[in-house]
Every structure is written in C-alpha cells, then in structure tokens.
Amino acid sequence: MSDSQEARVRALEIEVKRLTERLTRRESAVEPTPRTGTVQVLRSPSEAVAPRRHVIRNVALATGGVIAGSTVLAKPAFANDPLDLTLGSSKTTAGLTGGSSTSVGTAAAFMFQAGTTWAPTSSAYGCALAGWTTVPSKPVGVYGWTNQPGGHAFVGVGAAANTTGALLTGIRANTYLQPSGALAPSRSDAHLTGDLVSDGFGNLWFCVASGTPGTWRKLAGPTTAGSFHALTPGRVYDSRATQPLPGALNNGSTKTISVANRRNTVGGAIVESNFVPAGASAVFCNVTVIPTAGSGYLAVNPGGVTAINASTIHWPSPGHVVDNGIAAKLDGNRQLTVVAAGGGATHFLIDVMGYYL
Image (cartoon, rainbow, N blue to C red; front, side):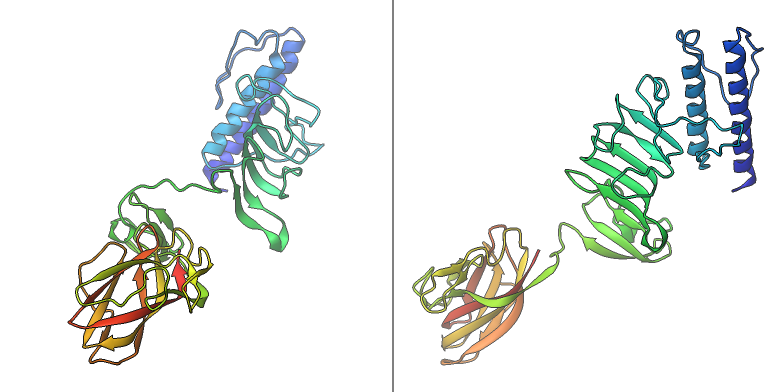
C-alpha cells in the first residue's frame, strides 16, 4: 500500500471513530460541535429520528470514496478492535444505498444491496466485498449480482491452487465487450501482451507481444472463417446421380449446389441432413472430375458467383479422372456455384471433409 493510500485508510479510521462518538453523544442528548474532516457529514430530514442510519450511510460513503481511489478498506472486524463498525447478518438498515434495504452476511466485510431481502437467489442488485461465503463459487473477493441467478460475476474466485481471476455468468451472454476504436494493428497507443480488444468493426483481437501498437492476432471477426470442424468424409454432390441435379457440366454452363446434406453415393438420396450445419462459412472438400471430355477446367465459387477469377481443377484431354482438395467459401445458404470453362465438359463430385464455423 502506498503512503497516500495508508493516509486515506487512517483518515477513514479516524472518521469512523468520530462518527461513533457523535452517535453516542446524540443518544445521550448531547450534540457535538460540528467539525470538518475527510468525509462530509450529510444531513437529512430523518437524521433526528434515525441517527444510526445516518452514521452508517456516512461510513458507506467514506468507504466507497476510498475504494474509488483504489484502496480497499473493507475487512472483517476483530472483536478487540474498538474502531471497527460491524453489521452482523441479523442487522439491516435502510439508507446505506440511499433508501434500499441493506445487510451484511457471514464473512462479508461490507455488502451493498438494493432489494428487501438478501439471498443468493434473490433479484437483488449489489456488490459484496471480501469473502461472501454463500455464493455458488466460494470464497470470492468481490461478488456482484443483477437479478441473481440470471446474472452474476465474481472477481477473485476459489482458494489455494484453485483460484480463478474472474467468473462471469449471464442469460443473454456470459460477458460483453463494448466494441470501439480502430483495428488493433493500426492503433498508435502502447499495448501489453495479453490485452484483449473488441474494435469498432466487430473484430476480436489478442495482443501477443507488447509494443506500440503491439503484435496482434485476430481471434474472430465478420471476415474470418471461424474454427475448423473435421468430419468423416461424406459426399454432398455427384452429377452422375439422379438427385439432386443430374447431368454433366458443359463449357460455359454453371450449377449452384447445396453442400448442407450428405448423400447416398449411388442414387444421391439424402442420408444425413445438416451434414454441414447452418452458419458454416466455408468447407474443406475434394472436387473430382470424372470422366472428362475435351480439355477444360472448373471454377468453384460461393453460391451465386459466376465470375471466373481462378481455376479450381483442370484436365488436359478427354478421359481423365482428376481430383483436387480445396477450401471453398459458401454463401448464406450453404451453396457453391460451379462454372465450366476452357472448352470441355465433365461430370464432377464433391466430397466434404470438414467445415468452418
């Protein structure tokens, strides 16, 4: 703890003692002379009838102010420490959070709660500091909840070798990273190894080497293919089969085919639906031409794209059987468009070995 933090801790201890003495005098009908200090004493219409509530609120404000300054003062009280102010699990008071019910449970140094009754499954909003023992993962350093158990978070979870830095739970999502800023590699500020950034373009980045702006790896984003999922190879199309689109592909013609379902290798009937699941961005597949007529090539594009920008597979003369393994981008309906060019014609097969999602 720094010198300034120690000074603030001492100042709070003095203020708690002063407030306790003031409470004692007030209950004896003796009003102390107002004094200034590090904490502003707040006055409210209810102060005259609820002095304890007012003192507790002032202590809470003082504690919150010091915590905001990065000094944690909350700690369990020792029985022989006259400066400690302890709220037991049987005590509640309105006022600590501005008119809401408040309580402190076993092993919690200080707890802020909005709601009428504390329970681990209550629909309360708040934060417990240092060691709440009845939460699902104990012990914890800080526990915050909103409509528990729908959303709650722990900072500092577990004990000994089983500790975790944070545990986050929610109904819509476990956590949310607010998108903002430029692409991580194009930034001009300094970053540290381990930084995680969600930029304003929907990309998620991880810093692997400190620097300005550091060295980054993209974990996910609108233009990434996603993770590769290996499959036991399955046939999704055969132009020689009676289903779904029979017939050879002639020069200058196209076929748009679905790779969603695995098909029988003889007649082409569906034997497994959603072999490639909805949302897949690409497939790793083997394209085979069999048998060929003349010479030519095929271009395999995302569904609906008929422009030829590259050759996927080429045959030099009639009667060849040629195959090629490729990664092929899909359209939103899990389709590919195959274009024939170069003068020849051919039947073709597509076997899928995996997909990206």
